[in-house]
Length: 73
Image (cartoon, rainbow, N blue to C red; front, side):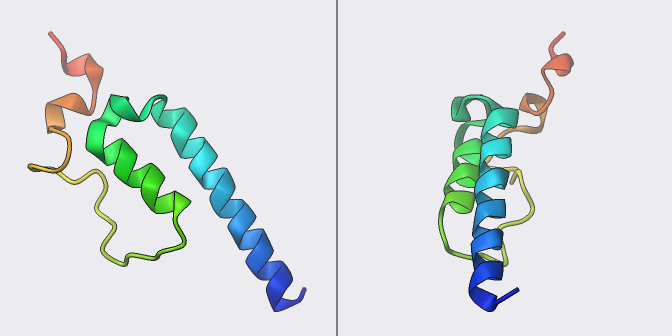
């Protein structure tokens, strides 16, 4: 496999990852800014070695109690 073929396969795999993430979180509003951050990151060609941890807790991320709707009670 040539380098360009490998690059094409990796790009296709990233497209699949984005589609899976979008499906898993449903509407990006479900996870607010963290859902949007994930979709935006995997849609771009940028690499951020500091992307993880995900989700980030704090002002720009979701609250721990919002991670699992089973916590409602």
